[in-house]
Length: 463
Image (tube, helix red, strand yellow):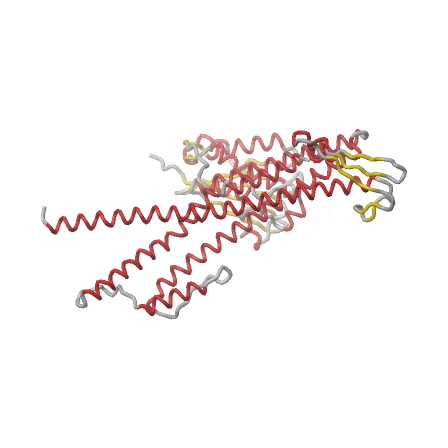
């Protein structure tokens, strides 16, 4: 083997080792950053849980005090003259239910409340909070990939900078050697470093004013903008999810207090509270399931079972079941049943998920349209796609709102006024399903007239 070939192979091997080393370093950095955020988030949640437990205890104490004669406490917490309060604590954590809150009267009377048992009875509240925190902490794996993608341009920039440094070194050792214009002066690099130091989270913009650094500025500014958008999107998602979970938690807590005060003796209060707790538990269960579905989708863990199917057949089945379970609306089949055996409506996809997307659209149409109004199913096809459309005569959506309806937890103002049943996640799930099938959702709506959703999925070419 000639010496020239040996040099080339050695150079190739060195670059390969360097690339792998850089990749490992990039992954390690991404994991380190994600772990740092994860641990801080975990500590914040631990502090929040302690604060939540203390607030629940104070609310219970306040309710006990309010159940006593009016002149026993001032402002619901401060015992009046000749009154005193005390707590009894268990010897072990396993007997926490024996914790009692005691009010001593001026005539040596004693009123005891079962504080420990009441705190334990609020376990649905604690479970809901812990489930949400667990879901948020599981985003670590997705965050690691996101940080790694965000670091990729910086890694590329670092490799280019190293190349530029090697070119400058070569030029200093061999002044006559050609560097193809790759080297940058020391002053330009200092200018870039200062611009990076001046950039902040609130103002993620790098500007040096040097034309030679324009391409690097564009790459860095794009990276900073993507990182800021990802941070803002995550903050909005956490805030909205917290807001949606707060309502069922408040209802559960309120009815639990009712049960504690009057449910032991009043059967009407008992029945009402049980029905409300079941309803809110079901709503919270649905919300958590939807959050899990979207979290798995973001992490790439939702798997599709793709099989050949007739999209007209799927639309017919959803129409049939909707007409059977909802007698308050008139469901219209706007296409001929011969389409069920027509190969022109053939596509490939996950039957369960595509049905779920159609059901979400139908449920929205039924929720936001008056009773006895029609909800019409139609199907069509063109050279590329087969399309199912679902049309209602409901309240409609404003032009400004249409641009946001697929955002998570977003609901139009008129929709919020009409119903509080929805979570604001249904259309986000439907769009994820359609996008995962390389399809699209079109929306045509007029306020006071109605809305038409059209789901288009690629056709299977006939042979």
